[in-house]
Image (cartoon, rainbow over all chains, first blue to last red; front, side, top):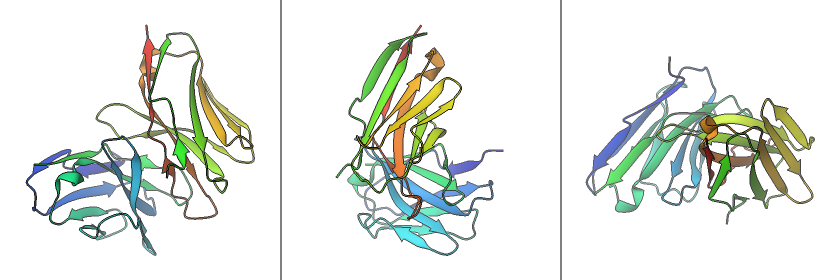
Length: 111
Length: 113
């Protein structure tokens, strides 16, 4: 009965590959997010998405794209992976304005 | 530009004592503040929050204090327990805006038995 689940937990891939990370929430929340925790441990917002609006952090390269088949899912697709994309990616969800529920993270390593 | 700063990367405390984790922010528009706790290999979990209309919020052993004039908040844990050992993230948001919190880089708390 995991509230926010993301898969895979670990992902090792070569530079230049395209990969996806999946996220699903069963909380009935209306908004989902992707955060990146970099090597300096900052949690930085990448995307915020509900059925009305996609908010993109302008610092996110356009190689990253969120895809939402329905309001319970927000997948993260990454094209042409680079070494600097190595990080832990967290999915989260909320009812607008309330606290977040985070997934357990996906550690991406690009080699 | 770090709008939310946690200047202490780590804090070590004896079991039973008080743990005080500090957080400073620069954006005066922030009106809602949250603390999250994170264990290794897990996502952050919500701990406690405070609205800018208050200066204190208490939940069991956890109390958050907000000093708006100083743009400073702190999380007090009394008494500290070994199970409190985790990384604590401070976050701030504008509730009348996008609501999306801005996080600090976290403080690693170690509580020694």
